[in-house]
Image 1 (spheres, rainbow, N blue to C red):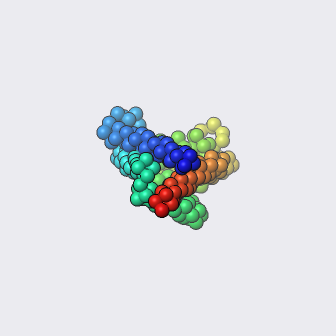
Image 2 (cartoon, helix red, strand yellow):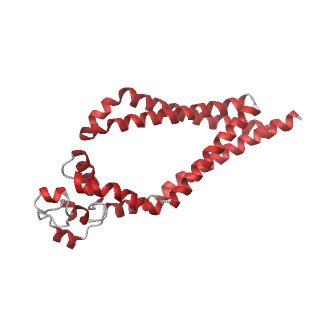
Length: 241
């Protein structure tokens, strides 16, 4: 009985954390949706992307609401010792866990296509919009400056572009190691600055252990939640006999 009481208490505490986390996301999502304009004002040229920010608010509201309901479900199931609620909680966590595993498998299977998909989006933007669209220009300038890279693949992404035509055949300064302006295609060729996709991959590899650790931690918590809920469910079933 002592073990059962301890597991029941852990179940309640665990779901209280889920409930509080859901409330936090819910409050954040509501704030973004209701008063997101005050934040969008800080984005300057990115304010035209405001709808995406509002969509993030709706996403937070949806996830927060699910977590709040899940936390209440687990707490009520443990406190009231309801087999139905415990089984429902177990099934929901199991579905979430399976979905996460499936998403991970799909991500690994299609990771080789990521470069092609991103390049299909990035190359037209660099060829046609860079230097003319302030949002695209600022995003790429910030990326190239912070990561010390040039274009998506390399400097050839800018060859024949609108930017090159408007600037007398010169490329963005990030494509050349030297500070001498302008940055000509020949100088960019000699500098051989890496493309931003390679830099992003290297950054992701550097943080892969952190991402993997977080994913493993979430998986362990989900498995623990399923084990605890099923333990309580089976214990109640045995007691009923």
